Length: 232
Image 1 (tube, rainbow, N blue to C red):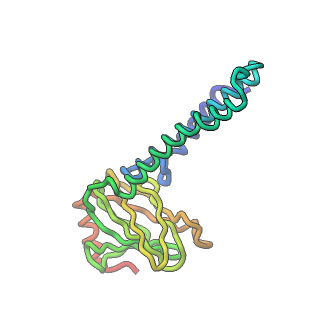
Image 2: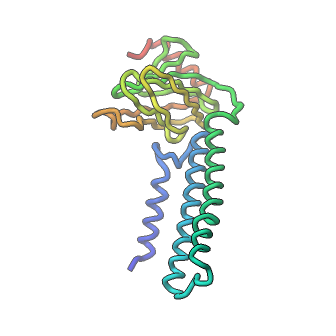
Image 3: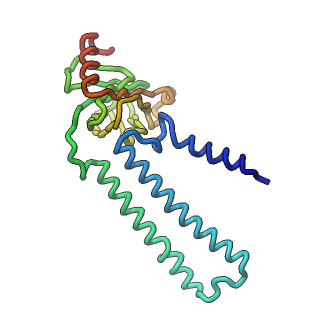
């Protein structure tokens, strides 16, 4: 027989899994927040439907004769149309609205900084054209906090996937092609990023770090990088 400490441990474990450097459920910016909200809404819808199905199943088991007043065809229409269609339509509408938000259709915020990210087996290189062609970093992306950053992503070899779970969704890095992703960190801090597309034996170690600075510190950092010379 299960005891309360057991269930408490399960709940604590579940809550702990919702946070961390690579948790999309612990957003640190509006774009990641939109994705997290969509996840929770989808989970709520799924749990609601599952709960209703289990309740009906329990009534069938423990209340013989339940539902006989409704014909087989009636159950098919009620269970196959009236129940799932409104729920699925609501979830789809919300999902499409969040998708429009994420691709910038409803965004009017100006871009504070533009950076270039290039994936190569098995590392990430970053350049900062707004500051100068000689400013580059390896495995650390510097961004200003509190503003929208446009990241232009490409690949030097195979298809990679650029993902900073706490700041935005993922986007593919394709050889010979540039894809664009917007990220935003609400506050200064360090945020982990990874390659989310299997790209070879070194895929597991293809990680990078995002350092979000205040706008003033961000400029100072890039100025210091310029003085040090370009990254290899």
